[in-house]
Figure (cartoon, rainbow, N blue to C red):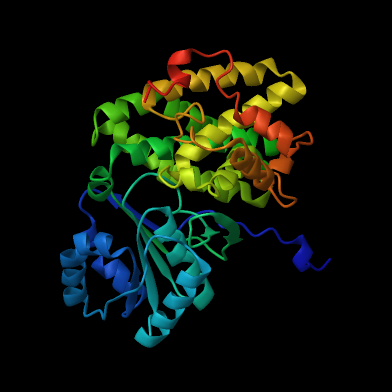
Length: 377
């Protein structure tokens, strides 16, 4: 019987090559040159300036023609249009993304649009963007617009622990929050699925959660140590592989939907992706309590609040820096989170903006006031 396109299941599981180690960037020139001779770099001016000498040395040694594209921090349609022009002018044959999630998403999506290979070089452990075949598009103001599935994972991921070690500790904390969501969302969206790879992805998400519970505090107390390296690998690599194995059937649910809604509030501008996602996990668990009366969700929320207090993740709107947000603004965020195409509807029960708002303002119910008044951070 012939196989049709509808029968095919295409997964983008992992980058083609992964290099990881300490101070490996200067050694990566040959791998980059193997992909192209005219790289276009996607990085903020400040980020590139910090690494300019190393890239100029690579360009000299490998006879590369380097150009640095225009990127000011947002993965937006306007930014991508500008970069496409610059790539054409440079005759770019490979894209290199350097930085955090938005720089890496921009580089990946640009490469996808131009059908070019892409190299991702994360400078923090705040997300798994260096790994995944997915990019998030934002407005110029930083509000989430939509996500774009890509045709493949990066061709080369360079994880240089020296670069990640120099990032603010807060970025690793945010990465812990983002990675934790893999379990709490996948167990809801896909926990009852029986397909082998989805079962594998969900169980990997559970292992990821347990690793973070066990090693995060030690990692934060000894930056550069063994536990720190394990947690960096977990947030940047393992979290990405879980999404690749699970594919579209192993979806985000409410935690990321709450993040998406919150990005539309100007007060959230100073918060990191993983901080909003971590708070979104608590909202998701609170929704399970409110709708289903789930004591398991209540216990999980209490456990997470205790963990958040230890590592410095937000348990409440106040800790997230949104204490000045009006009720109307919070209602707006809840409404966006409940948009018809939102992943929040993968919850096993219907939700409304009013219900989401109720959960948003009660994430710390039953937990100590110490966490809720912001003093834990």
